[in-house]
Image (cartoon, rainbow, N blue to C red; front, side, top):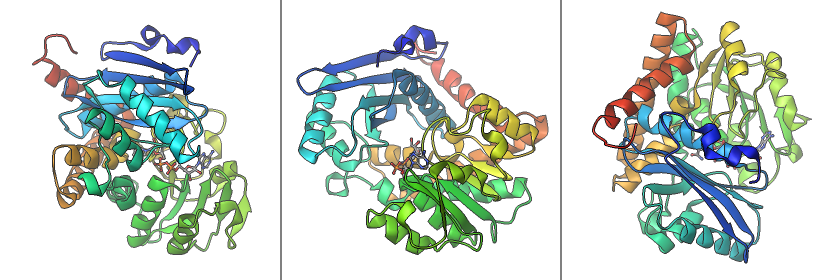
Length: 373
Ligand code: NAD
């Protein structure tokens, strides 16, 4: 957390960040940053990420992505994000102490509603809710909609794929899909795309890549991961390193792991027609521009992967599971279409069209506020 980018003013622009809280609890070794980026549309919702290598800059960038995601989805929420340095697989009692200490530290940051992210889950949100009375993505037993178990984000990605496939004249039936990151997002995206007739030809987790040009059995792969097994030990297909997932020829490539996995130095390896951004900020701006020049359609993260956020917001406002999934379908279908239609008309990158849409909504909301853009 000591990088120079932890200076919020190095990152600030007209939208935010509105508040930055550095969290340090030396007795427990808890270190982190909570960022509230913008609250013009309403209180910020954003995940709590627990990983050994997270940085303050990651939190600033992810919080901004959440501002855009909320605004694009037309939610009465702004964007925020927290990062905590630590091993997500630490023993449960230790994890509970970490998360509860973090919750106490953000008690007064009342315009921030924490949610699950990499390294945290609904149990963690239950601990936070128990401490401070606010969190989204709760367990069912206390009124939550289990968004990761139901695959809210993966469901939304498949809806986005349906719309985007028309823009690249790519029927989903038979489309070859590659997924980097076979976790909550990646696995459900694979399942929902397979239900639409697409064929999963490669998947990667942090242990390795498994490839089969003839198609991997998604249910079998799911059961393998459900059992806690790494893809590197999956008994079928060809195995490779995690990085090999970039070289697999396909029609749809889905990043669903970490930020900046597609960069100027490796984007040339991708052989695909459509990139659906399941992960947040998976692509640098240079890499995204290169893909656009090559005619690859890229659906930006905050449009394609908004399913989890839409579900969390529905839960926070007391909506049912059925309502949440109706909202995911309607909002992601409409936004993917609006963004790709505008990009096609103007020749601009889909991200530019998406940013315009999101910024317009934030600015319109801000006219009702005294202090916020
Ligand atoms: P997860 O922890 O369940 O899964 C992440 C997967 O990525 C794991 O399978 C892990 O092994 C794999 N991975 C990590 N490093 C890798 C690498 N270098 N190469 C290949 N695979 C690698 O996390 P998740 O909830 O599925 O989230 C994945 C991404 O999607 C994150 O960027 C997250 O911020 C974003 N996201 C998640 C949601 C959600 O609803 N869970 C919503 C929007 C965006």
